[in-house]
Picture (cartoon, one colour):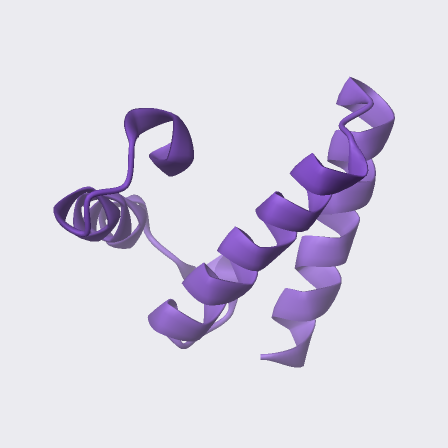
Length: 70
């Protein structure tokens, strides 16, 4: 799972560079991606579209807003 942490860091660096997101946005992305990584239990590179969609449905059932799920 350590590779997930590195993947998340690279993603966040790219988001910051491309979109100039605030520190709060980067922190929120980081927390959400870490939660997803722990929930799915495997490398982010191995996740299928179906697994990702299942997780988004799970978030919806928990009551997360559309913008949060996005």
